[in-house]
Image 1 (cartoon, rainbow, N blue to C red):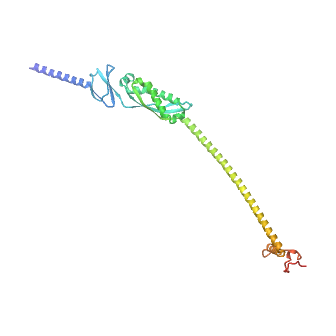
Image 2 (image 1 turned 120 degrees about the vertical axis):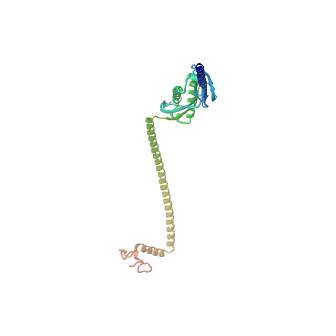
Image 3 (image 1 turned 180 degrees about the vertical axis):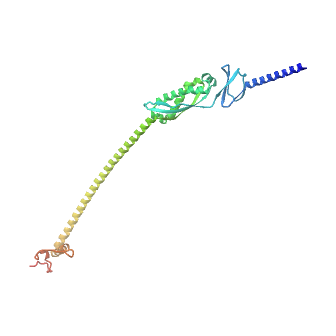
Length: 299
């Protein structure tokens, strides 16, 4: 009885161990693929299958086969700041990045093995294409509307060099393309001096135009004044002539009255005010109308 019980216990232990081993083998044969991943079944270091469907899948138990997961999302690749010499010999500090994804997981595994190695390999390729494309352009072209086309050229150049890696460069972007700090300071100083020079030139041109306008205005004023003075002199002369004609006609009509009128006018003009003193000879013809209504000279 004692021997039979021990035998049964040994069988139970063996069955439990076998069941546990079968469970371990079953669990090691199951794997899941996330919807953001691709799975590569590797057997003894050699890829055997590519699984792109998400869900639960089976393989040979470990260590016969193992799974290498590859991210199929668009990944980011940052490029360290590069100094590029443009076609016009100006130095540019360029900060760029690229976005890439795995298109062929089998080729990707064979050439790059994982994402970290891929980033190390892709950085110098991206940097060389940035230097090549931007180095063939002028500084103004890099900052102009041609910049989008330049980024497409960089992307296509990187894709040409990495087509055997099983990846695709989706996009290349330039965050910043600027002159080094010391060059920027010098350029800003030159720009400031240029603006000051232009402002002084505009002021000089404005002063010249102002002088021309002022001179023309003065000349026109002089001409207008001269014309006005000439017209006034002509009018005054004509008036004096008309006055003399009228006086002559009046004098011819009544000489005695005209002589009397002129004497009265002379008295009015010369004897103004309360303290006027006139010293003349009593026999002067100027006083001929004093004391005699006929205006005859006194003896």
